[in-house]
Length: 420
Image (cartoon, rainbow, N blue to C red; front, side, top):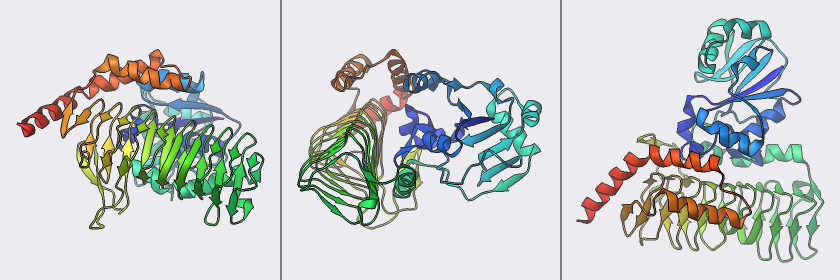
C-alpha cells in the first residue's frame, strides 16, 4: 500500500506562502498539512508529487524521500490532495475504490494495484483524470485549503484537533508563580519547555501547547487555543487565541489568530492579527497590521492578478519568506507581500500588494540591493540561528527573483511617474 500526497494546480492560490514550499508543508494547528495526512494513514510508504523546482529544497528539509516517481504508484494506493486539512476519521486506507471530490477538486482517490497499472498515465494530473472517469465519484464534506486565509480561519479548530493526539501533561517547568486559568487538562508543556514566573496561561476557551525547548518569559499571557512550537521564545507577549508558532520564533507584543511558519522574529510591541507569516521574516518594533476595515465590509486580497473577495471581515497580512519590516511599518487590511521584500515605514499604510524582492521607501518602490547582496544579508540572519543558506535555497530564491522581475520593474516605473 502506498500513500501519495500531491499538489494540484491551485498551489498559486496560496502565494506568497507557496513560492518557497509545497502546499502540504503549510502549517495549520500544531503541524503541517503533510503531517496531518501522514498521521491519518500511518505505517505505509509515502510518495510526494510537487513542482519540479521544489524537489531539491524539499529533500534538503526532510531527507531523502520518494518524489515525483509515477512508477511507485503501481500498487494499492491512497492519493490525497495536499491541500486537505484532515481530521480524525477523514481518511482510510481500507475500503472500496472511489474518488472523493469537493466542488470538482479531487480530495482523495483509493484504488487497487490493478486499476493503477491500467490507468497510470505519463503525469499525475492525467492519471487523476483517468481515475475520475473510471471509478465511482462521490462528493464529500472536506476542508480543502483554497486561499491563505483558509489556514488562518481553521487554525483554532486544528489546534484543538492536534491536542487530542498530543494529550495533556505538564512535563516541563511551570514556575509556582505562573498562573493557569482553567483546567490544567487543557495544557501541555513539553519536558524541556519552561514557563517563567508572572505569566498567565488561559486555557478556559481552548488548549495551550508549549513544545520542546520553548521559553515563556515573565509578563506574558497566552490564551488558548495556541500552539508554541519548538525552541520559541515568548517575551512579554500577549498571545491571544488561534495562534500557531513554528520552530525558533521570537515573539512579543500582541498576536491574534495568526500563524508564523518558523524562524521569524516579532520581538517587540506591535499587533499581528489574522495573518500568515513565512520563515526568516523580521518584524520591527511597533510594526502593526490591520485585520478589519473601518466599514466592516469583507476584505479583498490580491491573488494572481486580481483582487479576490475573502467573504470575511477579518483578514490580516500574508507575508513571504525572508521579508523585512523596519520599525513602525503599517500594514493594510488584506496585504499580500512577497518573498525577500525590504519595507520601510512611510507614515502611511504600505501598499496592499508588494511583489517579491521589492523595496518600498517614502512612497516609492525600488530595486534595493539586488539579488547578491540580498542573499548575503539573508545568510547573515540565518547564521544567527545556526542555519546555513544552502545552494538549493539560493537556486529557489533566484528563480523567484527572475520570475517576478517584470512585475517588479513595472511597479518601480509606475511609482517613479507618480512621484514626478
